Length: 205
Image 1 (cartoon, rainbow, N blue to C red):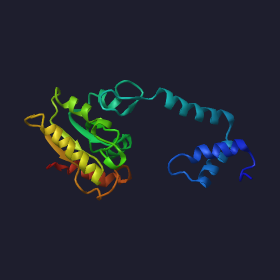
Image 2 (image 1 turned 90 degrees about the vertical axis):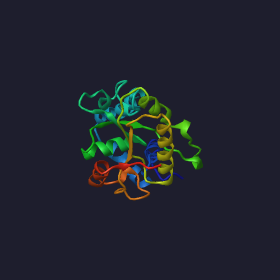
Image 3 (image 1 turned 180 degrees about the vertical axis):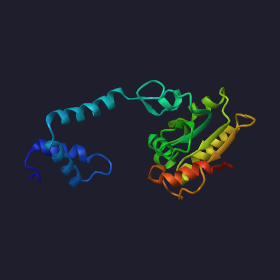
Image 4 (image 1 turned 30 degrees about the vertical axis):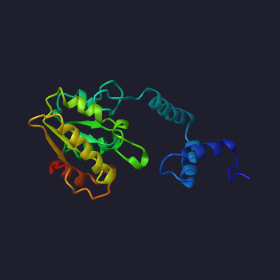
């Protein structure tokens, strides 16, 4: 026998519970909260999720999420276009932006090299990163990837690819190790992350 008095309730709880970090009890609490809200508010909530899925785009330059073909960061005239910060995912962009310590642009890889998970260099946006740097007047590439074995492997691979370009004056740096080894950027406090950006060091392959 089901734990729920309604199949509709059970289905809703199952769907909400499929979200990362949401357990069965939390899912039930959220669904019951939505059930108590005015219909218009719930319709607006559901519509926003549907529009997000159907209409969100990825910036054709940096692969950050965007409402347009080019995201606001890449389109801004106030950003330093000669500095590119390479990150694993969109959450990392948001984390670094929250520090208020970085004024360059980004490149979102969409993952990191992980042979154990079957993820190789061709499965993430490394080729598009190299393509950005070849014709552009890029002065610095900041590697801001997780301080894990997979992150370090990806750092080294990118370093070798960029070194092969033979670009004189191209600085390749990485965020300072104020971020604890094994940490993901999105779980690092803003002060520590901000200092890691400011105190970045030259990457030594």
